[in-house]
Image (cartoon, rainbow, N blue to C red; front, side, top):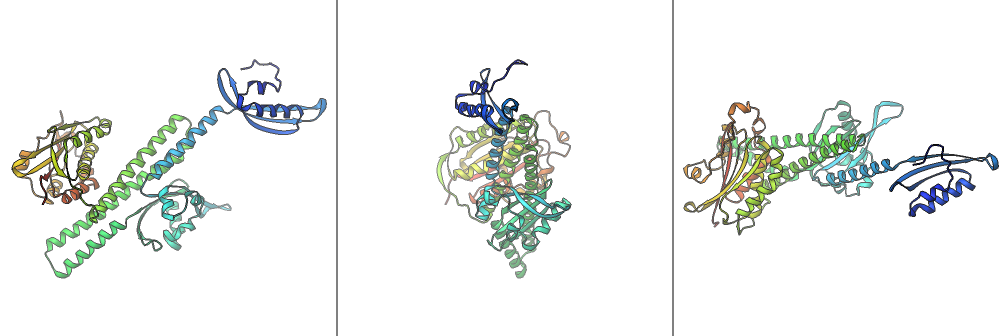
Length: 486
């Protein structure tokens, strides 16, 4: 704020400094007046009602009349704000990574100084809480450790060679292996990320136990020469589960790849707007990955028979109203609206938590695959059959009839009473099958984890899931529950 040519005396520093920094400013004056050599300090000063931070570098040269001061004052206020923002962003990112049920590790490549092409090792640069829990050591102690420290939990003597191969070729790798040290099974996804590799590991011991049980049942069926149909069903079940695990692993690799890239780009962002965009990208992908992992763990518990039902009497109508309201923000991002329709009071006997999970999974699936129209949640009762039901109806692209037949084949086929109890399906305005051009339901050719969870919970609650669908019109999921349990 000074005019050009204005004479400067050292006393300007304590005069302009804020109260907390005046002692520091006085030490600066003493050095400039009587001291020798170099001095560097940060000083907060008040300029036009604003507080700015100055970094002052000064060198005192000579003595007496020959004494001179060479000084530079740098305004670092914006730099400090940016550093604080980056620090806060880094802390937020770490918190998000720590919320993942998978162990996450980003290892940077260590190269031979004499030969830049030769990889000598890898060093842990980024990790999360799950990684620290797995090794039973604080994350701070793990950061900076070489890949050799982790070899007994990975591929033993082949660990470094495998990491080199992934980094040099860029070919992603997926392994399922039993860790001898812990006796647990891990699903490990490894991919190249710039000059390093990203690894994610998920404990799949429960899933492996299920697969082993199914293989055992398969062997028993083959040895006893039971029906070919039963044998085929078991084989098909195993194939579906293997495809499911591979699909989820592929999606997780993609999500964590985006996360890693965004983390690296974050430090290179030129503006706060760019940093905010990178942050949003990371958060979105971590949320998606966490949702997938949570669903996978839920599914594994259901398959292993570890879920129990907690029954009680309650009014189910508020549950559906509240669920529709809570998922409306997600629907709004797709330009959709969630409608709720049913009696204001419907007292039933059942498991509140599991019913909530079933409805939530069906509504989320409907939102995910519907691009035009709305989602409708209906509920009601059929006193003649001593049943109550709820349905989730979308105006999405519809499902292939073969997939619908497969879903219904696992329960009872739809009958006239089912149709009577179900509400009519709404049709999206001005939408025909040709509008979808066959592209809308390509990702629905198989059942996702969410729908598998619904089917498993239906079995647990002695409920029946019925699906009806029409390409270009929409899909309706109806779940029928008994009013009473023996």
